[in-house]
Length: 120
Image (cartoon, rainbow, N blue to C red):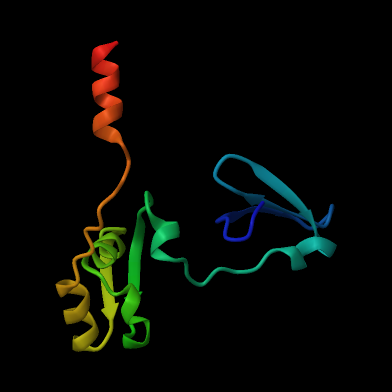
């Protein structure tokens, strides 16, 4: 397990004094004495949520974090919601995020790699 891994409690065994925690690909058994190693998650970052969906997403936007306000992050955050998305933010923060398009040049060498495959 690593800091930031998401999991759910799968079972509690009071007789053995164990808790089984289910991560994506495995179950991990914790003795009651070791439960201080895990913490309840109240939120996750947009970056951590990529590739996942959740029934409800509450997306707080703050002017104090203006560097992070961008259209692509707002879009990513909102599209994680299956049923309901709630934005908690001043209008100024929403406006700034919608106007800020960060299409940075990416240096992936994809074109060169694809042309290399085509030449083989």
